[in-house]
Amino acid sequence: MKRDMGQHSNANDEKKDIKDNMTVETDNIDQVEKEVDSETSEVIDEYTLLKNKYDELQKKHDEQSDSYLRLNAEFDNFRKRTLKEKADIIKAGGERVLQNIITLVDDFERALVSLHESEDRDALLEGMDLIYSKFISFLKQNGVEEIEAIGLPFDAEYFEAVTTVPAQDESQKGIVIDCIQKGYKLNDKIIRFPKVVVGE
Image (cartoon, rainbow, N blue to C red):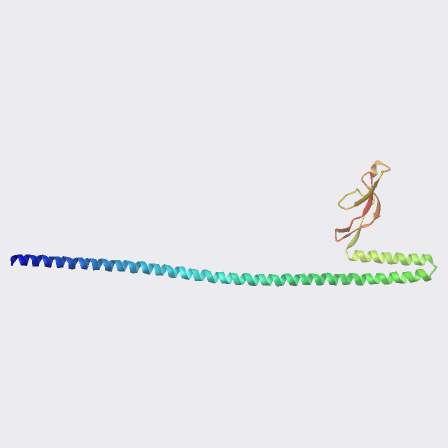
């Protein structure tokens, strides 16, 4: 019986040990669960932060994309409008020039009629001189000027040499001696180069 009591005592001790171990394991499980809950909570918090950051960046991206599309459309409209305005200005400018030329044509027609009907040579010359001076004045009003050439040193940027002739003296070498066709510039831009003869 003593033996049974000893065994029973050992069994109780073992049960107690098992119970104690289970309590420790339960405590460990509780501790692990708390740690897992804590880590899960941290992961969820980090996920929430990242999600909020992502949503914020996505919103900024959408705003910038929308802004870019609007700006691109506005620029395209501006470009089209500018091209149309430029074409209208060129067209209107051309009309103005042509209207002024028409008045000169009227003067030429009157001069031709006078040439056929009149025998007064001096009056005809005076009329032609008047038309010529009106035409030169018209060109100046529109920014067209004649390029001076004779007596100036030859410069390939401003003159077109048609031919060269032997210079009569040393001072005429490399100088424009004659102008075969006048040159003109429009607002400091050469629109027709003078064709010249150069001494060599």
